[in-house]
Structure formats: structure tokens, C-alpha cells
Image (cartoon, rainbow, N blue to C red):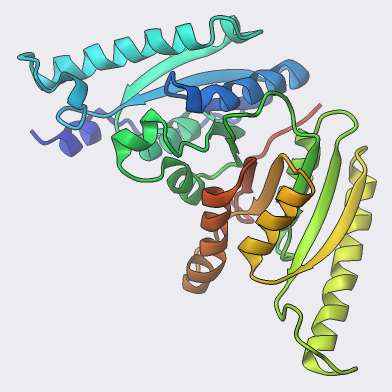
Length: 313
């Protein structure tokens, strides 16, 4: 039986509960790339009294090359790998405040698929994982786990930079005035530490192009500024954190990454993927570039209608 077939055989129908409390699923691999995710999950759990599940994923034999020389049957190899990973996860959070109360689970499968499925099954309201540029999850999967999870998840995904040690102090929310981008800004404000600041930014589609009063570019810029001011007022009414706005220009991903670096933002928030072809080609590519190029944590909120969300106290 092939590895994909065994993984499919082990899967169960997903039936997500309707949790009344915040549930954080933190996916980790017991390596240094996961430290930021673990610390952020611990800080959120302590502040919001949230339930946490620590999830590890080991790929099925023969993709699990660490056991390829074993003479055991593939199913037995997978189970040994799963149990070993559980122990590694327990050790990795041994000194983390509050982690003794976390549920700890390891599954056999492919990381992106397993993380999304377990989050749905458990009824998670937030997924936390590492950016994963060099960690074990990416090596095993052979592709970018974080990007794949963000594309499929039905709840917000917080990709923590390995250097993250506490809740963000400055969040940059990139908005295009869709419901998803507004949700991402609201979620970012809830993740901020006390005294933290939220910057809401829109990247002008026409960049620095010259315009004349009443032409298309002028009308667009005027309308975008009005929408940005409107969103700023809404956020100021709904959050106790300071909120400010920025109108940026240039190529979207580059403009956002440059501003985030210059302003020392430790979180970039964006709306998630819609299902249209053009969104996947254009907007989707911006989100992917942000995840690949960010030097801080990244939050992606799901598109409108996907449900879920982090509930802050």
C-alpha cells in the first residue's frame, strides 16, 4: 500500500465542535524554528485563558527517511515515529509557562493537510505555526508548509517568526477594503500587547503616477483615502489600542515589507484567499511574497464566510 493511501486510510470524517472558548492549535516540530510559535501561543493562552493543542506531524514511510533502514512494517515505523515526536514535543515545551496543561498530539500524514484537518476537527479558532523556512516541517514536506496552510485554513493563521518572544507591540494591517482585510486588522488589534499600536495601510494601485483633478487616478486616491479614514474610525471604536493609518505606494508586497522593516513592525496582517482565479493569481501572490520575505510574524485572516476567529478577552 502506498504512503498516500495509508495516510488517507487513517483519516476520519471531520466533525468540528462549536467551541465556546478560544482554542489555539499550535503546530510545531520540536526544533528552533518552532520557538516563536510556542512562545506566542503561550502568551495568548495565558492572557486569554485559551485551550491549546500542541500538534506535531510525522510523514508516513517511506517519506520518513529517518526510519527507512528499519526492517519493521511501514505501519509500525509510522507509529514509532509518531510516539517519538510526541516525546520531542513534550520536551520542547517543558520549561514553557502553562504548557503542562496543553493537549499534546502527533499524527502521521503530510504537514499542511494534517494541520488544517486537525484544526477543523478540534474546532480551533486560531492556528499558530512557525514561518518554517528551514525547519523540519519544510524539509519533510518539500514545500512551504506555512503558505499551504494559509491557503487552505478556514480560521486565522498566525505564522510566528522564530525570534518572537512576546505578543506584538506594533502590527501592520494591509487592507484592500475587503471584508477579509478588515477582519485581519481587527484580529491584529486583538493580538497586540497592552500599549501596542496598530497601523492600517493601503498600497495605492497607481503608485506615484501623476494625476489631474477629477481623472481616474485622482478619484481612486480620493476614494481610497476616504475608505481608509472610515476604517480607521471603525477600528478606533472597537479597540483600546492606538490606531493610525498610512497610504503607501509601489509594488504591494515590496511596499509593505519595506514599511514593516522601517517602522519595526513585529506583525503583518492580511486578508486571506478568495476562490476566484484572479485573486489567486494577483492577491494570492502578494500574500505569498509577504510570508516569504517578512522578517516578522504574519497573520492571515480567512475570506468572508469561512468562519472562525480568535476571541480576545
